[in-house]
Amino acid sequence: QSQLVESGGGLVQPGGSLRLSCAASGLSLDYYAIGWFRQAPGLEREEVSCISSSGASTKYADSVKGRFTVSRDNTKKVVYLQMNSLKAEDTAVYYCAGRRAVGVQPVCARYWYDNWGQGTQVTVSS
Image (cartoon, rainbow, N blue to C red; front, side):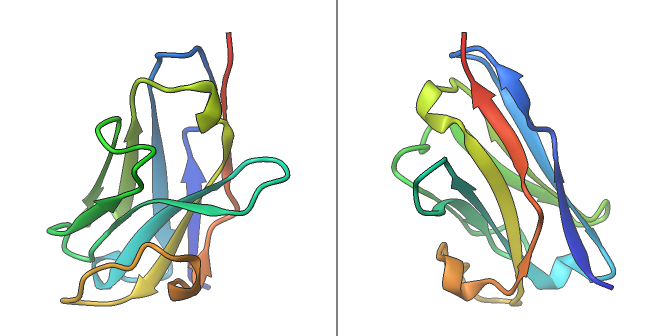
């Protein structure tokens, strides 16, 4: 059974950093574009970032541009989301999602992805 599993969430003070990981099992990650999304209580799930299957193309929401960096290591079957200068408004459950898509630009939208992880909680608070 193919699945994506997030890890690396936790509690961090404002201005701090966290690195989330999205690990794949049962699927060939190097064929998959990956998106990162987040959902805060009472709000819609929103896009954060996405990366193409090769890692050559990345996109970011304006709210995280310059603070977050998405990357991947296909040999280890892991995609990372490095989050720096965290703010209270970054508090949310973070999800990774995948879609088999080789040689195309990733789409940072929920509808485009068909394989979702269970999420990891990120809390930014002093």
